[in-house]
Picture 1 (spheres, helix red, strand yellow):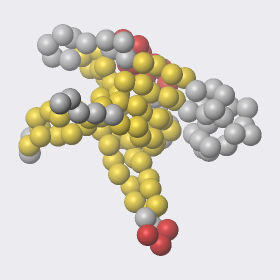
Picture 2: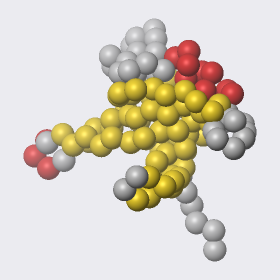
Picture 3: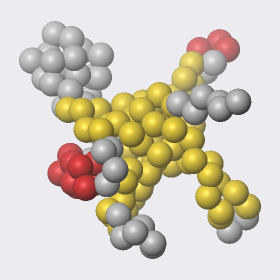
Picture 4: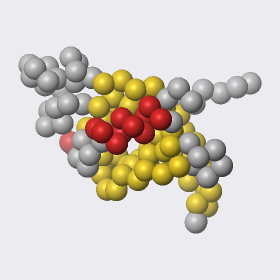
Length: 126
């Protein structure tokens, strides 16, 4: 039986944004991390860092134009595994990235630049 592999996550871009090509097919790729926060017991804030990989001309070109450290993004994708120095790594392969034009308040619907009215969707077609 085939399982379901789907991830929806949002957060702020942190650290380096790396552009490169895949080793075998030379497909353009962009790698970056986001920090996603959640509330825990007693209002405590818990942060999780997630590595995101985007592949293909469309996604990497738009990442090059719009992705900056601190930007708030929504990611739809799937989990992927790859070998790492200390064992297998689990990361998210982005199929769709939604860039928020108002990173100061992603839920501010009163802003003329709110995420609801000005989302930019890019889907990996490769």
